[in-house]
Length: 333
Image 1: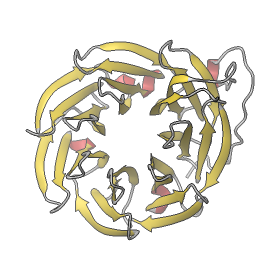
Image 2: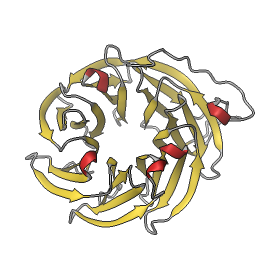
Image 3: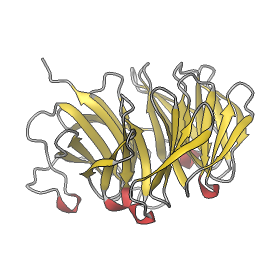
Image 4: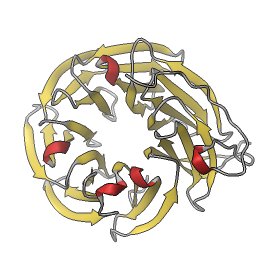
């Protein structure tokens, strides 16, 4: 693997954010904040959601991809896909407070910060799922024994995790209580994006090379639906109410919206309509009214109004902006 040289996170003052140069926030950050990992320049952007102003840009480890937010909403975790680490960021003060080394587990990518204060990360370079208990930073790993363990979804009751294994064409079912793998589910040729329904009964997996979205029953593990979606569906997101499943279609610059109950395509929304936008990560707002879409090839994030299907605004970010998170920062007393 290339570029595994550890990087030191530095906050440097700068009058411009051009060319990926990190810069400090002017004072403490508060309010609604959009975070994006800029994997082409190893930085994290903190953007004011209302004004669109980039408030700070921080150095990260090599290739920051997925981002997770702490249960209290005030701290971010950012994986270094090119290394073995996860950076912990105090968002209000725009500063890294810790760097957790997952070694010997390598290439963390998919990431969830659970309500019981654990970080659950795929570690693709070691074919495993790695768990960090943030109370004492103890680290454990569960082997998937599958190739390309890239993305993870966790049930709301924290009983199971599902890991998409791109190289093996499977999804691993992980019992988080027993810390063991239950089985591997065949899921097409290249399963990558996945999401689990809020009630935990349905697992949705996108086979990106075959433009297909699968639905699996999580009791029987049987495939219960196979739906044709847009070209190269690379991510899956479910609306907060569980009613709508969305695929992010990289090659088409579009979103496919699927009715979770009928398992039929409801409509397609063009975001850029171009493969050049290199559209990857998608993220619903808490109210389900807006979908944030990373147009990675254009270094920006589109905000899409779900009701109208219109792009209401775009946010500028760093090079190859991909991983997304949104949170509300509460001012300190």
